[in-house]
Length: 306
Image 1 (spheres, rainbow, N blue to C red):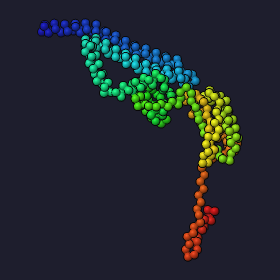
Image 2 (cartoon, rainbow, N blue to C red):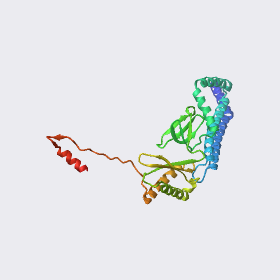
Image 3 (cartoon, rainbow, N blue to C red):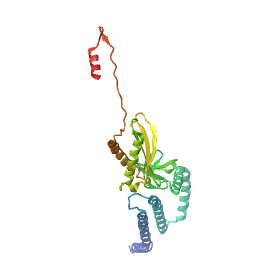
Image 4 (tube, helix red, strand yellow):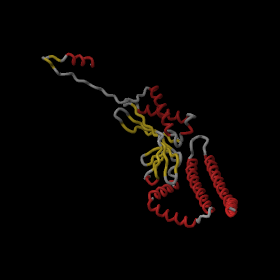
């Protein structure tokens, strides 16, 4: 019995010694990882706030900053966790060398079997390096359009107008259309009836464009006076005129909607017709006879139509 008590006492002493040394170190490692994470999050948020615009319209610098800080945050967070795990394993007395060697061999095997993943990462690196897409841009990628919610080294996340989230691997991207790079353009086409005086119509449209540009609510969004391109095409029932505004990114649709609203009111006041397709249906006179007489019901229907 005394022998068992002696063994138990030795075990308790060993545990106490381990807790005092290694256990305390493990707590320090976990605390250091937690503090590093908090510092990283605070630093990233501080950088993002530094580039935020009070106008509510994200600048090119702000979108670039948000994109890069998201990548840096993810990369450094993974690095913090990896260092913490390796240090904890070492503190537990497990040899790290064989584990790292095994991980290297496993990584090489996985690399051969995950070539598409490597392609995604490489394409994503150059996509970010060349500053093709930023968080907050409206883009079309692989036939899918939407606003960029986030970008990492492997995928891009787009949110479309219906609220659907599209996750697209970088390796599948062969063409990117960015609608909000540096500046945007509100391209507008308006049709008028063939009987209208085109010079008068252009005069009304130009006046409406200047009024919109001088409106305090829209003036900050419009970078240049409206460009009138003139008659663009002849439609089935209308003469189509084209014009455009150079605007801040993401503001082209708002400017175009307001311009169309004002044009409708100005055309109503000026008596300018915005045509719509008309269809005339003609029902010919029936020649069906019964006993040498035209059917009375058909004749009556023809008379009503006329």
